[in-house]
Amino acid sequence: MAEEIGVISNKQVILKDYVSGFPKESDMLIKTSTVQLKVAEGSEAVLVKNLYLSCDPSMRGRMKISVGSYAESFKPGQILSGFGVGKVVDSGYANLKKGDLVWGITGWEEYTLIEQPNKLFKIHHTDVPLSYYTGILGMPGITAYSGFYEVCSPKKGESVYISAASGAVGQLVGQFAKLFGCYVVGSAGTKEKNKFGFDEAFNYKEEQDLDVALKRYFPEGIDIYFENVGGKMLDAVLLNMKLHGRIAVCGMISQYNLDKNEGIHNLTQLIFKRVRMQGFLALDYFHAYPKFLDTILPLVRENKIVYTEDIAEGIERGPAALIGIFSGENVGKQLVLVARD
Image (cartoon, rainbow, N blue to C red; front, top):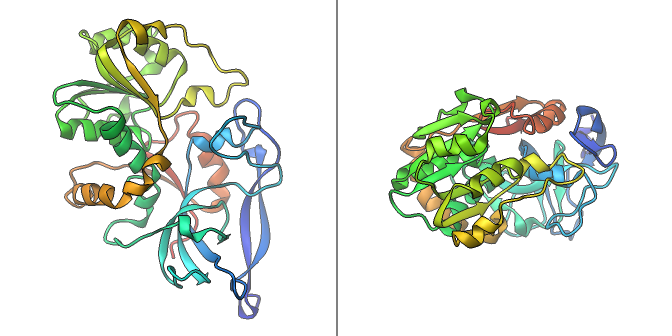
């Protein structure tokens, strides 16, 4: 009956309060509200039915009061938001119509009214799984592609090391590097996670000395390090970089749940070895999305890239799926299936 009069129930994931330390499911709650199925007359907003929600490490930083971050902190009592894939239910925006598929920033809820639809990406290619637009064809894909090709400036035959190599970004960076003709080693939380054709992989949890481990796999040093972890891993890598090496700083997941970040002790190696270390964000490269798709879609269609997803079904499982990425429980891109259509 509610649907007939233009209102429908809407499950939402709410942040209870700012989070200190490792996040817990109890830091979030599932609430049910209602939403109008029509956008207000004269509005340029778009109402989207969310199909998939992306679990991204960057969301952890928004669960506490952040200073100097590129993304605003969530507020207690607020709906979580992040990247997702959705279907347009109603639109006041000229470039989107009912039934269009989109990806971009959306709420962690069943339906989201998006006030700035110009920031959404319209999905034109539906011969690949829609879920891929939370990963390989979305923000993580652009992150991996731009970080490796633009920030790292690779050369064929170079030695590449990727931390958190089984995650959404790491699995892609390693495969891009292999396709480019590099020697590739990845580390993750379990040995079984090398499903992506790297030359070598190791479980960092089994290594008592990361410096020794890296010297085992890179006896002549590392040309390119794709940084996803930070902390002790970064310190060990700095000791093993080659002259004129490059470090692309994508994330530092080991630090996100600490109240005080660990210090880095080997930064003088940047001077001694003339290493270039650069942070970057995917949004710096969103303007090149069409070119990115032209490159990646053929690789996906021809199965030249292995892409693994870890899908939690139902928005109720969203909190558990999100916190799981911080303990390495996921293999591949973690996402939440909200609705199939």
